Image (spheres, one colour):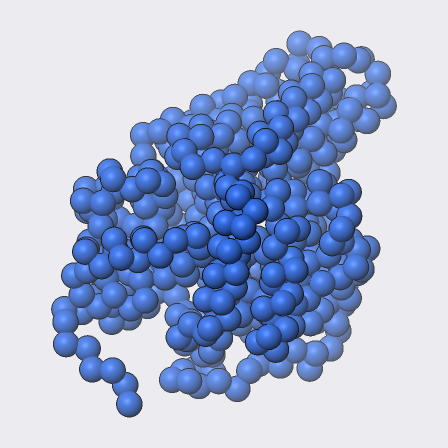
Length: 458
């Protein structure tokens, strides 16, 4: 029998109206909370709560508080009612899998006397990637007049930008570097300044969209939103003749990702306030300043200042080469972990035959939509920013990447106990081939992945 709800009920559209520092509501596990008074008291800072404001953040709340149950007891003080409808698919009731996993991870950190967000290696990594990005920028723009030498340095600069993003920006957006909100905030601003891309927009795309709705079409921004796409990766998209060749052209087009992203963050801030299907929260003055200064610094340091040393046509060549390598590096790193053979995809209720809820426990869905690769390889771990442990990252996003290898045996053990498959490829080559093979099969075999026969009320 369904549980009878007797308290005040709010629709998701009503919840969405309360998304500011002075009027902040969230929904967790079907209940609505007015946490306005908690915003200035939150140990994780107000920025994290403002990112979550006006949304159902059930799975974010659980995955970002893995080491303590105290936040749950605090949240109860702010309950005001129930949520009656959902903006995006909701997940079914939690299983014992994630509860057991979190308990064992807590025991591990307690037994080893480690802080999951603090370690010498965290800050030594950050120091190294900042050094690499500044040195490579100088080499790529001001040390040579030789066209081919500068092309080589442009590639090096792109690789260092990629490492900077994978090690600093990615950890910062997940609040996985220290316990101090100011650290995440200023590190994020440095991403705007150095790359010219919006950290706030990335947080919405990645934290609010991708991490909650992994591989859910029209909810996960990483899959693309519309029915028309340059590639077909879910059975819910319209198939076109050119998709037969997507395994060839799609990886090539990944190179324009960074250029696309800088346009996308403009749309999120200025045009329609959305990143794919994800609403962008009201930007603070700090966010706006970081955005504007980031764009100006990008234009100045990538074009205006280097034009004193290079002619325009050569500089454009260096810029495009660096951007394409940067785009390939980032996109391939993410695609091999989620768009690959043996992984699952879901959809949102835009058609009668699409399910309105995800008939999976959220944590188990992370295992079904994500794969690891190259365990034990220091090279894979360093060059991927530990995202060769993508499953661990999705289950525990607020734990620093330095600890991911330690958690692998724990996740394997709990998966075995609950009869859940933990997808792991032995190396990067097999991981990327599983991505290419998936693109080929989806483009050439209409029956490779069929629509699940799930009703809207399942």
